[in-house]
Amino acid sequence: MIKMTAIYKIPKDLISFDKHYFDVHVPLAKQLPGLIKYEINDGQIVSTTGHNEVYRIANLYFKSMQEMMDAFQSEIGKQCAADRKILASDEEVQIYLYKTKEI
Image (cartoon, rainbow, N blue to C red; front, side, top):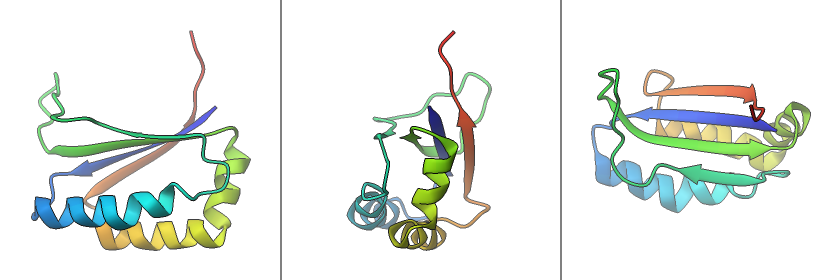
């Protein structure tokens, strides 16, 4: 399975961020072809290493890296990527793509 993790820093305007995130960004992302699951943190994020600037963590799951890349090359994927830049700049979010395995 392939997982995309997006870690958003605390935004300057929490209300505007949440409104855009839940009213625009999430509905777009949930239309990504091949998306298996979309999950976010529920409530406060506690860091045991002192990172206190994190507001939202989102995980998106796909069957394979190719399926995820195809999803983001689709029209809805391009819209989603463009919208993420409206939601948060590259300095305000970290995004990781990786294969997972159970151990």
